[in-house]
Image (cartoon, helix red, strand yellow):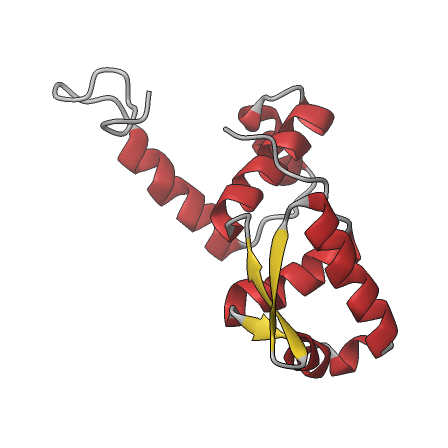
Length: 136
């Protein structure tokens, strides 16, 4: 996995707009973030920071800059999830899930979904390790 830029929570909100609407110009980003409470200048600063970090590319089209992601949403999400898991649970997914179950932070629907996922991962004669084909 390539080295991904560190993105702050605020920058992540900007990235979500870019991921959903790219290619998108500065004015459109500002419009999508109108309810954020951030000034247009603040949003422009975050866009420039994201370009400097290598998360976005920008291209001048006429009188505006148009932005597109250099980091894909799923790639970033996977990396951020792995970092969270490593930081707080020493990389042990089971420990994290147990923590949420013990803290009663999973709804009945989430527990049912987890059961279904686990049922699909059970070892079988064709799949002795219980791993999905091509994943391990």
